[in-house]
Structures are given as C-alpha cells and as structure tokens.
Image (cartoon, rainbow, N blue to C red; front, top):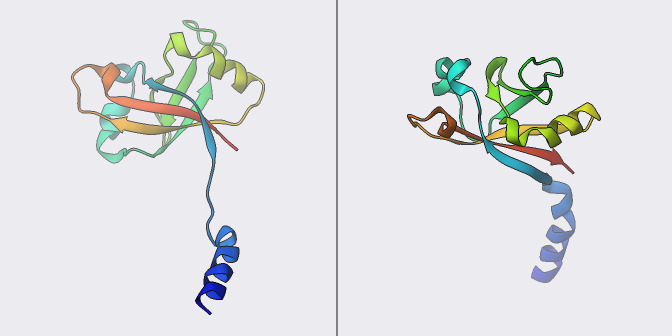
Length: 121
C-alpha cells in the first residue's frame, strides 16, 4: 500500500511542482549607479528582484547601451565592455531578462549591485 501511495505521489509531482528553468547569459556589476536613482531606492531592493532592461539605441555615449531599471527607477547600465551581445539579442527581439543577484554596501559604486541577465526556457 505504501508503494502505491508513493508511486501515485510521484506521478502527481510534476503537475504539482512548477519549476522554472533559465539560462544565465551573464553576471555583471551595475555601471553608473552613482549617477542614477539607486541610492534613493536602496533600502527597498533585495536579491532576486526583477530588473527591466531598456535598449537605448540612440544613446550618444554608447550605441549598445542597455539601461537597467528597478520598479521604474533608473539604476544604471550594463557595463559597456559587456553589453554588445545583450543589445544585439534585444534588437532581435529575444526575451532577455535581468534580476538582482547581490547588494553590497560598498564605497565603490561598481560593487554595490551585481545582476544577472538570463533567458527563460
């Protein structure tokens, strides 16, 4: 009887558990934090929070610029040396996403927010 119940539970498990799979494209420090709105929203953010990626094709400083926002507040950018592939995928319409990985109270603004860019499977 126990085996039957265990097998029944196993058969139902995939329906009951929803596991999301994703591929992490990159992890990067946030660029430009000191020039944006992050300080004002710092206490509200937490690891795992969803970030919005906004492609800035007409950015005068970087043709591959990808702005990062949290709940409508501009936090900064994907670093220039790491943004070309993400920009290209966004231009193609790929559903790239981002989230906060780590928040650190650091003096250096490049060490404050670590984020990752990923694609859901």
